[in-house]
Image (cartoon, rainbow, N blue to C red):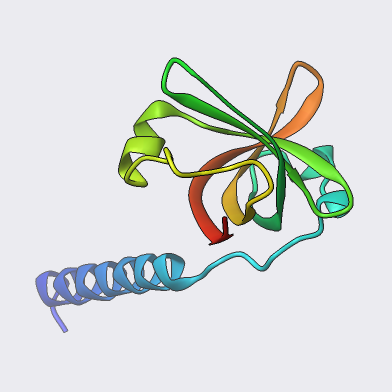
Length: 122
């Protein structure tokens, strides 16, 4: 094989590998985690929790939730993400939800920055 053919073949294989990794990463969904099992080592990880809303408020288009599955964690849905979710006007305290998002530490406390919210019952 000459150098040009080898370079083309290498590029094709590399691009196919990148496309495969991207396709798999879009289909993977995090498993549901108990809130009590989340700690500071999870900061930056995408996690999914299921529980009831024991706290709910809205300020400046942002939603602030407290999710309770026997343990509690605060969660925030920023205005831009709330719009992508089609608005959350019907969301009520006591609703059963499944929240997926990035774990973060804010003012020394764990929270989830919600990227997807599934209302199981309202």
